Length: 180
Ligand SMILES: [Zn+2]
Image (cartoon, rainbow, N blue to C red; front, side, top):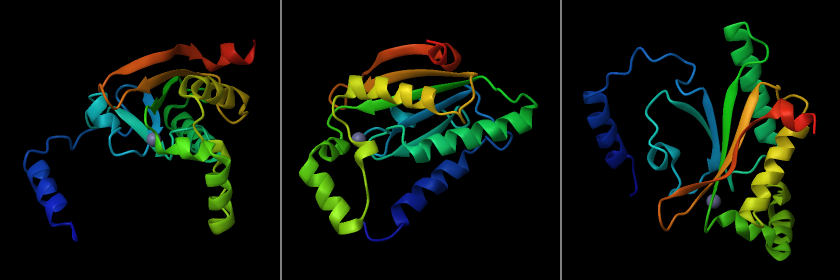
């Protein structure tokens, strides 16, 4: 595809049956999903999200990086201002997937080549072992002082070969993780 003709045609069909003008800005499910940018892992499809259901953050690997922490802290601050509750309850779902391109970042040679060529450090985004990395990402959130206690966090692993997401860590309050 060399231009936007096809996607604009799809948007036309979408707009023709659009009925979501009155959606509120806050997500209906009170949920933020962090996942990978991989085209096979679109949460709207694999988790059946409708418009307005959830906030979705995506990056290479879907890992909790300093940039992600800043995004979530900013969002929580904004929601706090909008709702008048400085510690809003929010469900954060971390979703990694099988066959992830960010597994390349675990290779020191690849990482060093990228660092040398572009000066970009992807060590925080590397996928080594999804289950361990998901646990580590929950710790990263718990260790981040700007993230409010009211957050609930859980972790899923999505299998690109079966379409099935498996719960690796069930939802738990960040406040409880901080008092361990
Ligand atoms: Zn990926």
